[in-house]
Image (tube, rainbow, N blue to C red; front, side, top):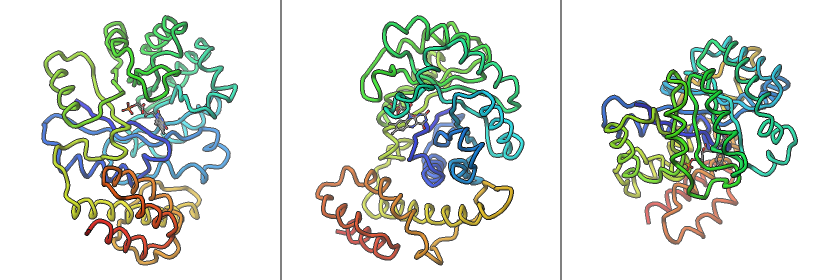
Length: 344
Ligand SMILES: Cc1cc2nc3c(=O)[nH]c(=O)nc-3n(C[C@H](O)[C@H](O)[C@H](O)COP(=O)(O)O)c2cc1C
């Protein structure tokens, strides 16, 4: 049985995945389970034109045993190039390649080509067929239930047809219109699973919010064996500990926060070196803690804030701390403020 950390643009960077994998390895105690991680979605067009601009999404480490490269774009030639290049250069690092279909973010939905992919399911299906043929790694799609009620029947048929070409299909059971917030028709996934090609694994995604919900999903699954895998996201943003019932005290929380910060700095430093080399090697091999030259790395410190604020989301009286952190760009002072805040 596989559990997955769903991809999330701006969050599932290499450091976040390392932290999640560490927690899973340390605490998850059910046998026969493994963890899948996914990169943030990477534009295939960006990869084709300016790889150094987007390749940071693919950074990885040896401990990320089951990593999936997620890509998106609408042009088949560009997608073919990206799939071929990833599997030629980096196949040892990825379990499979996944095409994202579709994201409801306003900027994405406003772009004509994305909306076109949603409506022109015939062309999209041809694209999936072609990509699955050229991919020597398993190929998957991640999609939603349907756009709105008028699209339900077509989307069901689309997913069933796609299941003939994909090794795996992840279904986020909210509709495109529902974005991320509404509860929805979960039976949709069960129906798909019943009718889909039996060789295609179906992954459930959506609204597993707590460890106990995750466990009850796992128990249901072991009794009924309906779905193949589960994937979790929004709950893991603020709580990579969703894979354990263990609640950390402030000391432990501080340790993990500082570890996460150090990983982000280390990864940025390795990334800066990597893009100087002609053939980018996406494997980060060094994890030097503490950092020897933190002063050159303001960027990861600023990027770390989003993770930090999620970690402390449930601690009262954190407003003043957040205001202070938002002004700080250097390592020493960031660590000092975190230490002060979490030792009170
Ligand atoms: C801010 C944000 C960014 C996301 N980025 C991606 C992405 O890059 N690729 C993708 O397939 N899904 C993306 N998703 C969707 C999630 O992977 C997931 O399908 C969704 O949050 C539902 O799962 P949940 O109910 O456990 O949160 C994103 C979701 C959010 C809220």
